[in-house]
Length: 259
Image 1 (cartoon, rainbow, N blue to C red):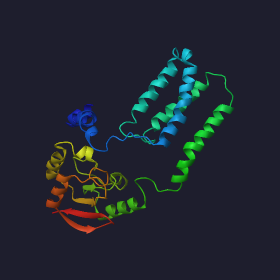
Image 2: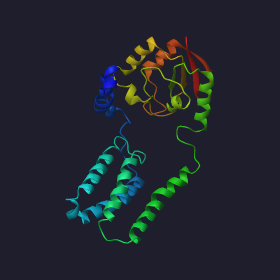
Image 3: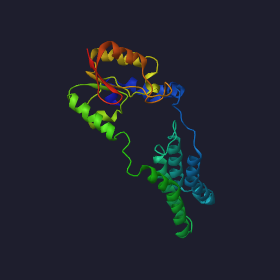
Image 4: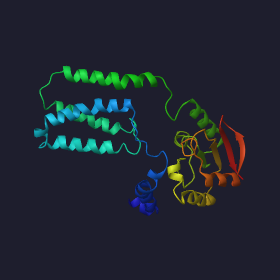
């Protein structure tokens, strides 16, 4: 907190962590994605129903058990944190508490190895095998062959002291290939950049210290607000007025240089 205040960034922190998510993010199309498929509901059922059964079976004992109540509290909080978009990637924290709580509740009743073993086998068949079948030997997300090739090109075409802006490509390339974006920077998501005044503020800061190069990915087909399709209009107009299109460096990515 002291660091934020010393850098004059405390108001930005309050905006991005509290005000913007509460006031603007949820109003943006596609930001909230909580619709669950039949498979999602089936998996959640296999994960949560045994816990619910054990908890009600032991409810008279557990209401006085601080450890179980603490674990249940952590689990409920971790489930809330899945919002605003459901995915099992965002459910990772809850999975940890589900595992711990399941083991803790089992320790409170007399049960052999057969029932837990069957349950674990079902979980493995229903959840693990389909994922392994799809993802086995697949490329790493955000760091596939095309991303590595683009990152190497950025590394070769720019110097470590050059500030660059990636309009479309994954922002992880900044870190993986040792390059720095301009300040102020946000990722290319509409729920950030369509907040009133944000693009204007970014441009005002760039006028003082602009990026030297911009790697601009052409939009994909889709809704204007979809990631990969979205283009921040004020920023793109400013780029076209102040930068020169140099060359096509990838199938759908162009290099722009400051005039």
